[in-house]
Amino acid sequence: MLAVRVMQEQGIHVEGINFFTGFCVEGHTHAIRKKDQKKPKRNNALWCAEQLGIKLHIIDIIDEYKQVVFNPKHGYGANLNPCLDCKVFMVKKAKEWMQEHDFDFVISGEVVGQRPMSQRKDTMPVVQRESGIDDLLLRPLSGKNLPPTLPEREGWISRDGLYDFSGRSRKPQMALAKQFGFEDYAQPAGGCCFLTDAQYSVKLADLWNSRGSKEYELDDIMLLKVGRHIRPAKHFKLIVAREEGESNFLKGYKKQYPHMRCTSHGGPLTLIDGELSEDELQQAARIVARYSQGKNTPQVELEYVTTTGEVTPMSVEPMPPAEIPREWVL
Amino acid sequence: MSRERLDCHRLLCPMPVIKTQDRIATMQPGDELEVVCTDPGALNDIPAWSRINGHQVLESTTRDDEYIVVVRVCEE
Ligand code: SF4
Image (cartoon, rainbow over all chains, first blue to last red; front, side):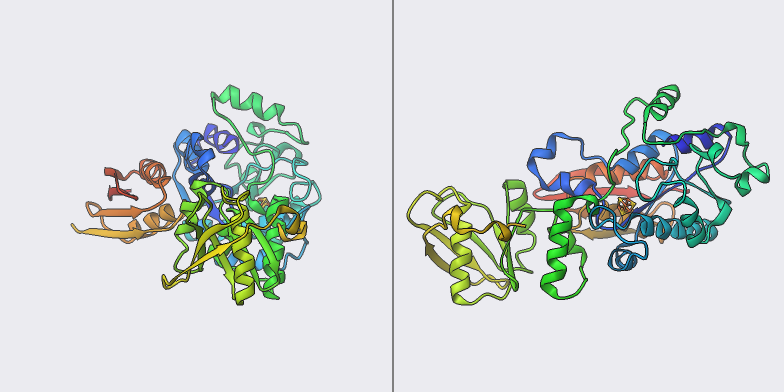
């Protein structure tokens, strides 16, 4: 937001590009979980664009992005976040967009030294080189700390109007935001996507491990954001809703996955991912019963429903928590 | 002038916005697009997207579990 305003101050016409990888921490999670519904359900990128008075183009890169997640040349960060490769990829896409739409250069709000992996002084040139953007990428907030870019050398913009922010402190940004009159200025301090989340990464790694290869579809990575994931065996797992909002969301997948629901007590909707034997179905039902309101009763009634809607009634004893090994819960 | 319908059932934001944006790019000024979604976030996001891109929201309603936004395509 700040970088855009800095450019606007110099009379530059700016439009925004927002890439959607499927892992973005945005609307979905709010839409799914009931407890989050007090928060405004706004899309941050759209909101920022509106404050700035610029157009915003949201681009779906879900499929192309898979290669970045599967094989990051520069490796992963603390979790499964391939930040450096991700930046290279996005800047490359931004360059393509710039060329297709007759724009002159690309800006980003990065600050030297702000993030451990992708915003170090030594990794910033990597992004420029590998994305092919070279000196057409300008970082207005740190511009004075970086070599002059083409827009500066050509006099399209003035270097004097750039800033020299660096390091992890966000104080100078906050001060500038205030100066620009941005009241609700909130940049995420951590990552902007689920790949930086430790628990999410465990679930993604588990998904790959159980399938024997790194692959995913949009539905897979959406489901990893929802519910408790319990894997009693390599070939199947249960996705147990944690509250009503999640139950409603999981209902949308009833035609893709068989599910279980409690009939004798209140309980979460549970999707079943994998092929189960009779014994395993019993085991699954006992786990589902454990998360129902009948967990302390001797018997819980459930229904197992296939993707075509065939219903099998079941009656099981809830599994005591001690029988659910910790490793099962992802 | 034509009116088209875009089915965004089960899609979570920002997918309905992306689909709306991509469909509108193929339409003419004056045309109308009715977007039918199941993610309530669309009621905020599609109007926000329309405002910043200069299109007009004619209607935004909730019907059972569906959220419907009608956008008129304007000259960009
Ligand atoms: S945190 Fe940001 S830079 Fe890192 S992988 Fe996610 S989207 Fe890419």
